[in-house]
Amino acid sequence: MRRTPRTHVSAHSSPFKRILTALGASAALTLGTIADAQPPGPPGHQFRVVTVAQGFRNPWSIAWLPNGDMLVTERGGQLRIVRDGNVSDPIPGVPEVRALGQGGLHDVVLHPDFESNQLIYLSYAKAGEGNLGTTAVSRARLVNDRLEDVEEIFVAEAWNDRPGHFGGRMAFDGEGHLFLTVGDRMEGFVPNGFMENVEDHPAQDLGSHKGKILRLNDDGSVPEDNPFVGREGALPEIWSYGHRNPQGLAFHPQTGTLWANEHGPQGGDELNVIRPGANYGWPVIGYGMNYTTGTMLHRGREKEGMEQPAAFWVPSIGISGLAFYEGDKFPNWVGNAFVGGMSGNYRRLVRLTLNGDIVTNREPLLVGEYRIRDVRVGPDGFLYIAVDNQYGQPTDIVRLEPVDE
Ligand SMILES: [Ca+2]
View 1 (tube, helix red, strand yellow):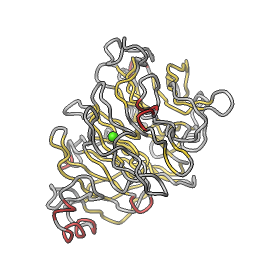
View 2 (tube, helix red, strand yellow; view 1 turned 120 degrees about the horizontal axis):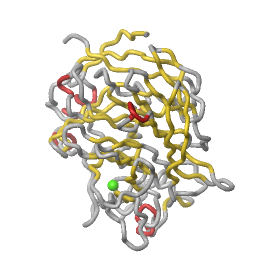
View 3 (cartoon, helix red, strand yellow; view 1 turned 180 degrees about the vertical axis):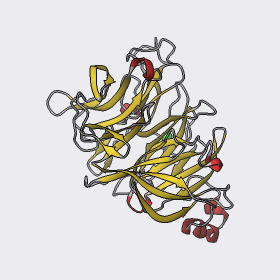
View 4 (tube, helix red, strand yellow; view 1 turned 135 degrees about the horizontal axis):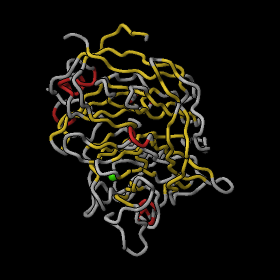
């Protein structure tokens, strides 16, 4: 394990905080500016960043086995095991993925009863006829470091030939339901802008899985108590809709509430509390604008019947990964949300303090340092980060460890 010598400080000093103090209350009071800090913040922690394992290509997700081994997906289609800091060769048996653009192998999660059934779930971009792709899920038994009984349990109705917005994050609730995000598959882009009749976008169409969060049984079938079961023209897997490209999904360990974050367009990354049957507005409402042209895209920022985000970022940080801290290594962080940022100068880790479903403070950490694809809390209570490189250069899994204060 290679240790990096620098110590980072949470909730004590950051250039952004100083700038915001100078700007005054107008910038500091709204949760919707780039303001990822609002003095005075709640107490934080000093920490250092330690490299756990090296040499990944576009690592996308992290999960832990009961024995402490770490599973890591790489977007190109590899699933690897990290054991005592050593990275395995690709695990045999992973389904073929459509590794193109933003798509490829995405999330890995364990079945809640993994210890008795050895089931893991993989989400990925699946290739279809011609140039087509969509989001799909397979499950398999992980036995002796290989996958057996691989079974494709779900294929989303989200086909097109575009290279992005697959979603692909998964999370189990406490009742054996598997939640899956599906992005809008880049629908709506037209030359020099975005479709005008935004109400007709597939994310607003309950007959499509594009731009949805889905709720499945652990075998891929439909739970009978899903909100749109029995509604004519609606796909019964849908749990919530009006999403763009959700890249973080997690249940809060204390409240049991489901949260998701999603990429906005130019401006308008969001963190949302996910409620059954709710419409999160994309692309009818939002805080973004057209790429390049900077022109109006949405009808407005709010509308009756459409949810407001718990937090949003303008400009976008390229939000990815979502974890709620629990553990004994960082007592001041318990119950806080952590999200990553991937975008250029906005690369960062953001710590969000919550009061129930309300975001009360945001603290930027590691500003400009890592292009963060995923953030997870390990069973050891350290905070783990999957670092991406947009050109596919080798990157690390790192973790935050507390230092004496
Ligand atoms: Ca929204």
